Image (cartoon, rainbow, N blue to C red; front, side, top):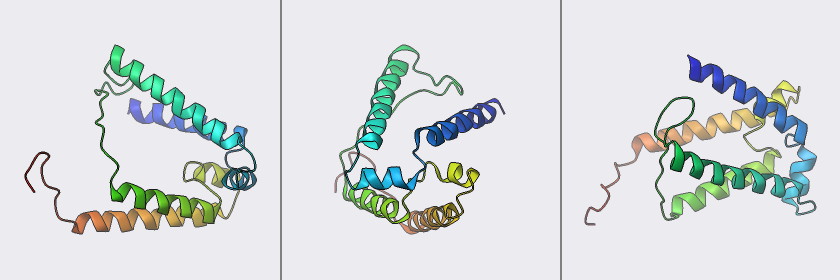
Length: 146
């Protein structure tokens, strides 16, 4: 129960931050996608830098997640075709709907009715991905001969 409560609190803080910074505004998103203003990219860059440093410190010092106690670990994987295709689909969807999936519920909370279409698009995408994964053959074990 505790991780869910903490997750809800962090989610509310994240939503307020998205609203406060203008990240839910189609105008801010559009101006960034058209390379008119660097605000969004600078904000993203600072978030990535913070996460990069924070995760490495957590991994080096505690090696356990603060809330759940799970080990903090990841592996590095070379980019594959699926990563490129997925990023293009994500970018096209973002450009079409003028919204990143992150602030959808924040937009809904602000009364932005068209966020319902964005939520529907995300739900359809998740269902399509789940259906594809369910029918895909199991991947070969790492290090197995081809």
